[in-house]
Length: 192
Image 1 (spheres, rainbow, N blue to C red):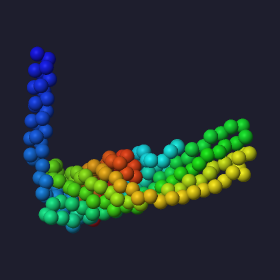
Image 2 (cartoon, rainbow, N blue to C red):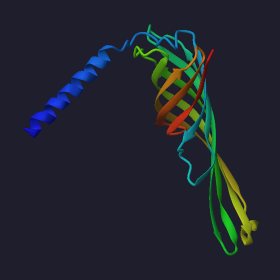
Image 3 (tube, rainbow, N blue to C red):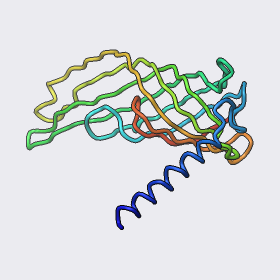
Image 4 (tube, one colour):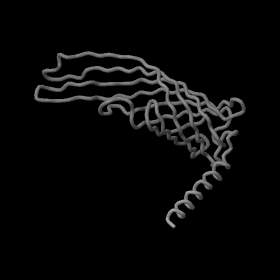
């Protein structure tokens, strides 16, 4: 009997999900992000690929331009971001450790189906970018004679899902989850 109930509930969830997806318009932009719209997002992220304690949380600015490709609701844009961390150990002689930072720049490409929810712009996309990574020593006390720094650049590829909700015609909030510059970002969105 328990198996039958679990099966029935599972079947209802699958049917509900299928009905929800049938209401999605995969060929049109949502009402809040039409062809030619420009969205500028400024956000603060949680988590990054850097080791240590956060000094400056991941901050980023993105710009997305609604550009239909093949009649489908796509956007193209870019990202600029910065974050830094510090990993320092201390003992009776002083402290020694490293400060790390990333400057990120990337191109974004996203798909924006219409879920039929007023003022909502949900999207999923990919980012191809370049990260400038640097590390420098942090030393005090007896360790203050030790110093050094290094830097490198690397190509980065990431994917993300996100949503913007506009409280007025041009001002809203956004949130994104993904792998790339940060694992989660939230902030303010302005539509031009």
